Length: 253
Image (cartoon, rainbow, N blue to C red; front, side):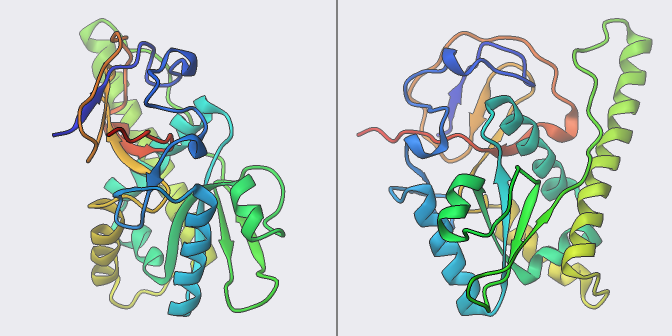
């Protein structure tokens, strides 16, 4: 049974200080997830190290989805990656077939790859065939959704159309970024994309949980129910409702 965690704030910026004790605002504070999305006692830096080794053994590069330090930025970035993985076209997802994927903060990544660079780009591509491992930041500007929900019917319908357009632009920007960085091989695109969906959509990438929210409460997939706090109302664009959750969940019992 999923655990429903009701968060008393808008979907775009939930107040970290209001969270219950079993959720931590620093990803390393509680248990994270292993490569199958199951609870793991391994600290985040160990997950980065394990992902690096898997990539190296498979002769692949490591793609790091960067977890921002700021809590509100984590929500926004998790939704952007969720849009890509859940709604990206085959050509957007196929490049991911050739890399190992992990979610990590830049601080944890730098413990394994000191030359990972500065700032918090959307992603970092790490080659695993050289020592020290070369790293390339991958970044793009993503259009933002307007906050809040229109109240009258005509404005609401227009807002839905605008959000669909923005979602398509965000997915397109991330897909283009991946194709430019990883290559746009047009062979077996559908098959490679299907493999990516099986690996990263049915289960989350290492270092994250899949979660969903429609504006009142957040459900973290695969986590048993154990408590709740008050519900706040917030509007979430349709294609952002299933997203990568970058906060740890402390395991009890």
